[in-house]
Image (cartoon, rainbow, N blue to C red):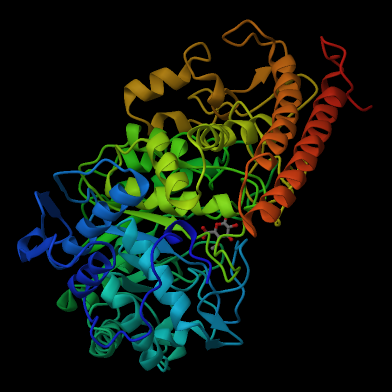
Length: 604
Ligand code: GCW
């Protein structure tokens, strides 16, 4: 079996009867590596996920022992620095799978679902255990197994499918990983109630009974995840109720069992008229949730995407993450490379998360969630190097100060037997891959130049006259959207210092310029380069770098099957980058009529 960054570790045993809990597994992992007597494991339950390593003793809580052992193993095998003590910054470190029970994966780029096929549970227990081991090795502790768009028969996961859910939970449990399920807000209707109104006493009683049955079968379920009133999903708005009413309904049902209700804040009008320039989709989440701050039960976590739109190549931090002082929050990022090359183009995310975490107030952030990039492909991730995103997310949701360079270096050392020079070369390309992608697929904070629906490849007018609220409004003279108070007013959702920084094009970082401003093509950027010339230059440079990256990556001695996969994907990426370059350059050239100052080929 393909083992990713655990390839140098021994196989898990086939018989798990003696390995019921994380501390059992901690002892087993250690015994494979070190003579049994050289390390002692001491359980100190109060430490929870945390651990201490001193001399030849690892002290930790039930799960902390397993994380402590993995810290030790990553140190021995991957050269990671060994902490004397450590505990995670966020109690919940979650992977959100968008898997449907028919076996498809929404925005999945690594094959079909690892859990489902043909409307049924269908999995290989050995692969599930391996996935759980990968999670434990980097401190991840929750997996939501089904799509937030809950299509039948997935509603049944909390009804007639409970025994199967319980069997899957048993596989994850020894690794300290708890299951979560996405539930549908209108579930009471499915079960015969006339309404799903959160203030209706029968609905409340129904959710309480349901939670009781669920926890009878899966006593350590992490909780429910909900996408409500978003992109056609049902929600409390149907009944004229607020999202605090909706979230609290489920939270109260889960509370007696210690369950958490994770409520996504991805709410916006997806039927906008492109002619309406006053409405700004970016403002929607803040407008919906900020007035509700303080009204949520204490086991509610509001899960907010990192940016105000939708995992675009470059977005500013969502202002909602900066403004909910009395509510627990989860940061949501996307490992699935929906808008960033779909696990064909190389796009290493740790540098992106570093920026996000740097700007993020930590006080009420209690969880980090990542939309999964997993699938049934042999290597789980499609692109062999996309595994580093899963790995890095684990390390950075344990410790958001973790260095992106160290996370990538550690992953490479664990995964491949490279010389220092080869490893360095790979690390350099991985760490610069995000900027390379940005150069050819969207720079200066310019979003939505992508092909609608598939979200792969360039189509600069594709979303322009559509109803999704996703416009760049490029014209003959100018491009971008004015989001200052003179425009849509989005900027006023930020705390004053940030708003001040973004408001003035002179102080707004170039890489967000067209997100916040509408500027003429002649506008001089910080280095004096006219805007239109930068658009051309970046696209030429991005395509050149993608070609160079292909040459250098394919010269590295990757073992098979990785070598073949990487070569195929790097070649496709080179073609993609050329296509982006030509389509976008021609688009702007046709609009503006401005020639490239360096006389390079732009198609008419
Ligand atoms: O942008 C959209 C994606 C949808 C996804 C949605 C979400 C699960 O294109 O596929 O649906 O985001 O985050 O809910």
